[in-house]
Image (cartoon, rainbow, N blue to C red):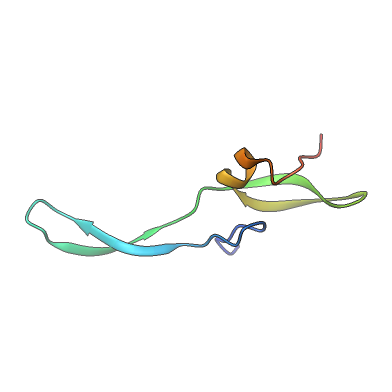
Length: 64
């Protein structure tokens, strides 16, 4: 399973964990993906990985 949103293409970003002593350790910021049953085309329902920001924005029409 790739960690990528099927709608907007959001994928993991790379950054640093920063301690109080300013020691830097590499880390990943993963998108908050949810598996959703959604309408792809007319009459076509499929499970897709969608980030929560796309669900909130209404870019996905959920299947009942």
